[in-house]
Length: 68
Image (cartoon, rainbow, N blue to C red; front, top):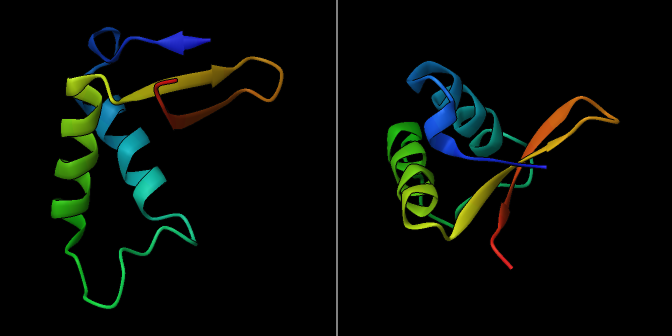
């Protein structure tokens, strides 16, 4: 189930993004990218509609995925 980002508090949205960008396997290449930069990049993708927030009620989990 897609959750519109404007239905989340700023703190909740940041928490979802931060959890996503700090997952193992989300490295950005050979150069180190600061956490705040990663968060800002993903937030911009959400604002543009390139990325959506997906809630799975079966697993009670949230994920970010590209818009199809």
